[in-house]
Amino acid sequence: MDFDANNTTPRQEAITFSATGSEYFRIWIVNLLLSIVTLGIYSAWAKVRRNRYFYSSTHLAGSSFEYHGNAVAILKGRIAAVVLIGGYNIALKVSPIVGLLMFVLLAAILPWLIWKSLQFKLYNTSYRGIRFGFGGSAREAYKYFLWLPILNTFTLGLMTPFLHQRLKRFQHTQSRFGATPFSFDATVGSFYKTYLLFFALLLGGLLVLIFVVFGSVFTSFAANMNDKAKVGSLLFAIGALYLWAFTVLPLFMTMIQNLIWNHTRLQQHQFQSQLTWGRTTFIMLTNLLGVVVTLGLFAPFAHVRWLKYRLEATSMLVHGSLDEFVAATGQQVSATGEGMADLLDFDLSM
Image (cartoon, rainbow, N blue to C red; front, side, top):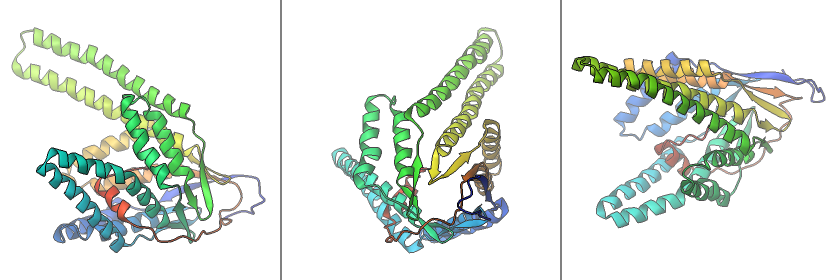
């Protein structure tokens, strides 16, 4: 229930997620089977069905979100994307030069497609009857999704935190709820600190493992141990390296999500994210184990577990009323970019 807009006492509104793994499994298995039977054509309707379920299961301050994407529009976008990607593969087989030219063409239109994808996703999302939207310009999209990434390659990745901060600033400040834009004030320095901490822990742990674990492996090889013992010690060392990497990666994801959402506002309303390293690591590792053991059948349950935790770790510090926003008029946007983003598996949520 919203208080009077003049009330200066903020209140915390938590996001809740009511979807369950068993319900989503039924949606997922039907979507999968129909997509296979229809040779992928039904995948557009599958996406709409999935998004409507997840959006309607996401609640803030007593109201849920809604998804309005049109399956036919998404299908047209996917057909266009398949034609582009298929054309590139054919061109690559015809001639390396023709393939290179096609690659340049794809790189040239990719920022525009990502821009249109962002517009489509937000325009087709609403809360309390008011739709979201995304502004920005194609020129900005090319700057952040083409020219800066190219420049970053010449710095051997040293610009990555800077690029990440600029991408999130573009994505958040150009997003709006109705006529009200979001704001984003995380600094480049805070992104560099997060990346440096992640790499320091990753490399520090790897060095310890190399000296300790691989030291024991070399010792076993130097000794007259049987082949099975040597192979076992080597596999243990490799497994320890992977385990450390899978342990530190959740730390980075936790820090990045908390950094981004703790510096995002909608007018006077402040978002808050409280992911924890331990919980994130536990969910990711058990999800991975579940998917492997069940040969993929646990995937929908894993998806719901991870999404539920991320959403419910996020809340909004509300100052006044959430009913004060004014809807903005907008036109239907193309789903071509959305189709390409799906096929290339882009995820701009982080």
